[in-house]
Length: 253
Image (cartoon, rainbow, N blue to C red; front, side, top):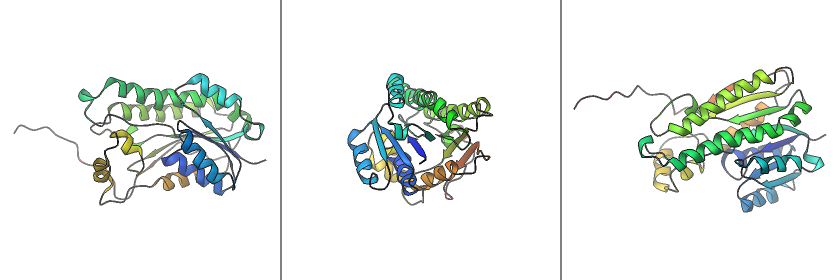
């Protein structure tokens, strides 16, 4: 029976790259995202290689998430791997200048959306048993603070702890859970965060070598294909050209 991967946020970035990587290995794909045209574009490109089912989905809507899961066609019901990729960052300015609505959007997407999809698919993954995987897209921001991270970093800290706690609860089911935490990675993520500011995008990624979505997709694929007795609890990945810096200290002029 073909393996089935369910990917949220499959229209760009890590999610889109993961769809292509799993398609290369002939996994059946359930691709979800908010942008119908983007979903259709990916599906049309990949469907000659492997079975593809798409669903336009806002992960913040718990009822719609449940409907999408409950109405999966029979060929896609036996989900082997869940890739919780949907998420975003907004408001790169200091917290005291951030819009409260942006904070709510990050919480609703990065936390509530993650919980909605995981809860809906957990019975299926438990039924699949050994070899089933939940891969949650966290971030180094969930472990390491930096200016302007405020709610985004806090939401990714939730991803880390939620993943650990799922591991405890799913002990004995065979279902694996991983928090994968990328560092500097080049994608539409920064354009979304800055409201489409191309100059900010170029400053962030210019003159260095960031991770690419395909790097993370390859890592996700590796995690989902490990022998069933292996679980990677957390995997933090930075580009070689990124590291930590000294503590910031405020001094009198």
